Picture 1 (tube, helix red, strand yellow):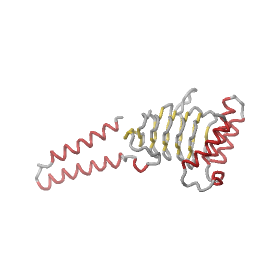
Picture 2 (spheres, helix red, strand yellow):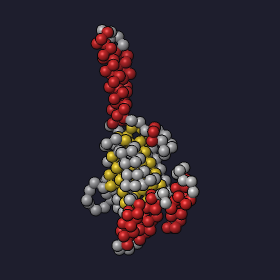
Picture 3 (tube, one colour):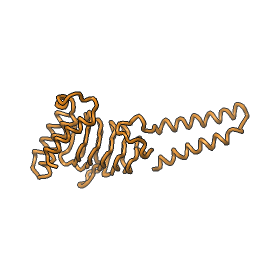
Amino acid sequence: MGLFGLIKEDFFTVKQNDPALKSSLELFFNYPGLWALLFHRISHALYTRKVPYLPRLIAAFAQFLTVIDIHPGATIGRRVFIDHGTGVVIGETAVIEDDVLIYQQVTLGGVSLAKGKRHPTVKKGTVVGAGAKILGNITIGPYAKIGANSVVVKDVPENCTAVGVPARIIAKGFDSSPLSHNKIPDITKEMINYLIRRIAVLEKALTTGDNTHILEQDNELEEIYEAFIKSMES
């Protein structure tokens, strides 16, 4: 697909993905992510043709207008939607495949000063939650979901969910909807709930002197604990 075809498709993608859009006129005023992509398409085309200075100048102008920093060298596929977008940073060697959804304050950054591939590859259909940091030459598999404010420094397999600092893989294929952030498991909440239940079992045994129920409840809690540990080791 040619440059103008990509830009036209970017505008159409916003119309498909944002229920808040009431008219086409809003595209020109309320969607910095769309304009950041438009400028990037142009700067990237010039960058790949080794045009000096101008690609970085266009990128700097786009950053000034949109508060979104996309290096001209980054490769961005079709139907990528940067929702809201403020504070998004995408590094030079980052690769974003088709149908990826990115929210505000996301960083696709590097962890090395070495030349070569040093930024992430985000495969098709991935959703990257607000504030997430994906760092280094790692791969986020197709249709993965990265929880808000997570820091990802290792590969994430296909159709998995990663949350936390550092991010851990805690679920696989939990929901097909790209907006279902409310259904991402809360690993901290789950572990605290486990500890509270464990303490309650011990307190009951100590205060009543009845420990006949401990074994049954302990086995149940042990299954929860083992599942939690397994998710941490993924």
